[in-house]
Image (cartoon, rainbow, N blue to C red; front, top):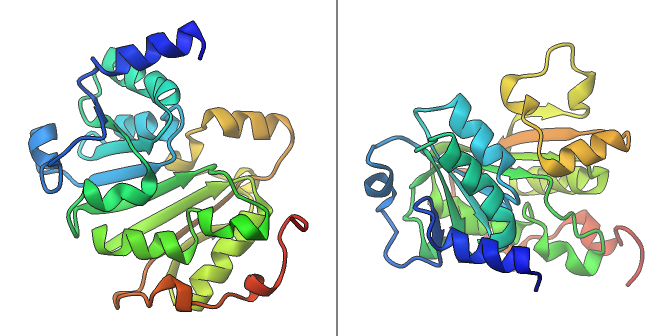
Length: 236
């Protein structure tokens, strides 16, 4: 591991806005932020561009970036500290461990920005909009909570729409080409490190916002998707 990474790992351990595999945080986020504002998650936040951007736009919301990569988290956490964004924090952990850190109904919104699309069909269960993850998120979400996906991947976008239809989600907003819009909404103007790279390559940016059904989802292994019979991105 490079010296710079080692230095950043050491630094984030001292940052008051970074929690590394914390214990006993369920139901305690309002104590951490010293307010009762809604909690928003950015999953696989990387450098935390959306975490920081949303914290700036919404001072009345608490925004938490979740990622396993401490080296990436360092950038967003450092910016939030420098800019005195007391409503931004970062949680270093695996996404499939979210129930260890949040109580049922504690999350008001989820953002998933430019995640790995895991194009091989054999890796589909790692996609953050796969029913396996949606079932994980569902109990953590407050009534009426939304999930937002922003991606350059046509395959992940199509897969997510397929999942939404099969499990009966409510689509709130669906934009096939963000930058073809006459007026881009403020939240969608936030650009991540990867988005800037994709735009430079001329890629189309897609966005979809949806709500999970009110009824508990069936176990994800029982949910059959049309793409289960097809291969996305080639054979293994």
